[in-house]
Image 1 (cartoon, one colour):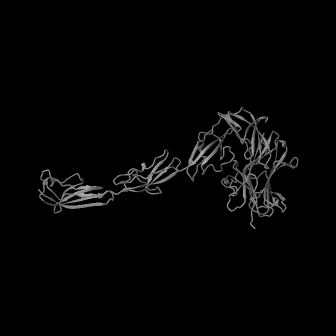
Image 2: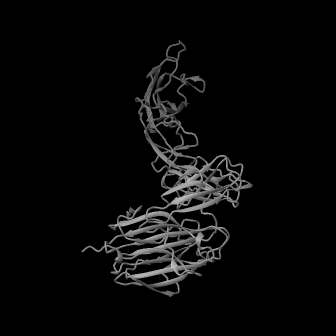
Image 3: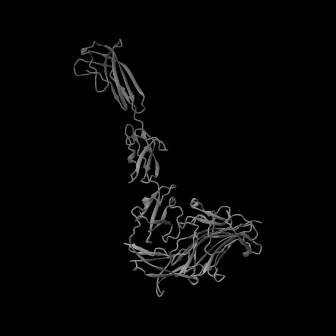
Length: 560
């Protein structure tokens, strides 16, 4: 029988919005410990009853993660183990041991009496389903207990039990697993307006399956900042519009005016242009997915801030394939107001965090959110293009030596790209005479764009050898000043360079020398005519194509 294991992994973020501050020290594990949280460990029995007892935090059952773990991902849901809400710490509740274990953490606090008060849950769940009976399955539960009245709050009460038909779940692609399902970040709320002044307790519990063969664990974080769960409800001087964002993860959103007599929008965000007057109140009714929370209404007050605010983001950021771009680089938001807090997302609603904005290796449109200390906010898109510089080379037509080829004419240069030329494919051996290549072969053009991306393209050059050279001279000449054959010269035609022409008498005495084929011998030596007889000429040169020495010699008869 195939053994299936159940993984229940929950990444849960809880944030509070309230009028006034609450006495909730370390609710977000902001000091890197579980101080003020109560920890429990125990087991689940064969009939599904969880039995836990208080304990000190137990490593690997109540485990703290800090910034050093920011790059770690859960192996099943591929989400970060450190909650991407900007908090410094998260905890993992439970572990991968499958021994019918159970873990719990709780936090108790008094609801302030200053006005409306809500708790916002943001969570992601991963489950591997072994198909046990429901009470035997691993699960995660999130409950709120009314300590004052000694009862649990009915709505919401989450009890995620492994199943292949949980709403909003996707099949995991984790290698080697057969039925792992996960749910991306989602949200639920608890409306505590009816519990003002009362003491409540948050309870989070994970347990393995009752048979001890499958396990469950959870990641947990809490946003310790008290404030509105609706973001973007402040605007600064100079802003032409305002966009407010409701908590992500709900099924439907309906925006209303303050007394809910008029619907003013639908969807997770609401854009108003021009911005409404200062202290305008809006209400939003949020509808959860079926059986995953309660309908709730959240109010927000728009605040006009006299401070100026500017978020500046370029339309496009370029990078290299495989290396990516760093959206956190100062140059990306240059020109923005100083001191703003930046966050990075994959959607325009700023709900889906971009986990590694410093190394974005997938091209597309991303979104940068800027918020100043007064609460003014804007979200702007940035296009990430990852491309190598284009070098569209056309091989030049064949030529015949000594014609030359200019490699810079084999392509159309692009603005912002630097080109260099090489004799090897690794582009490490420079080609100095790239504008006058005189020998055929394959050469390489290296292109580097403004951001350092490199392309290397090859170009094939064909230069045919020249026709054979010739070195000729007459075998007689008559220096008698009759205008006919009075001078002796050696003629060199073709791709050949003269080094020297020398004339010797029969005893081997050098009587004439020239280094130019334009010069000639007139049959004299030191200005005096030489007698008739046989003399000898020697031609020394270089073959311009093959770079070999050329030596020619013959006799000549001087006749008067």
